[in-house]
Image 1: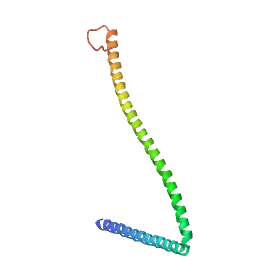
Image 2: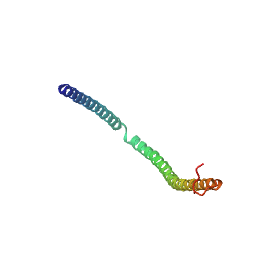
Image 3: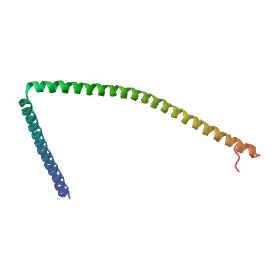
Image 4: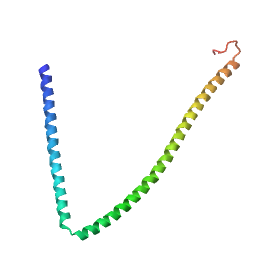
Length: 131
């Protein structure tokens, strides 16, 4: 039985090693593809003219700046909204806690009133009547 367990455990380790090797191969292939794409992009950049490149850079910069400003404004708006909602959430949580405490107190008062009512309806000398 021990030999069977050892053999099974050995097979599990071997299959883990095989999987990790195949994952490593896939990573290497993916990295090579990414590197090839970078080289191709670099060749395309080198072949374009300097003036059109400057124009595109200026245009891209303007677009990126505008997009950044819009994103920044939206982030500020969302941060303010988030702070307001956190405050409201905190207030609501405290309100729920207060209402739960009031409910428990009301339940206790109701139970005490029930006992008093039962005792007043029964004509006996004990505090708790057993009807």
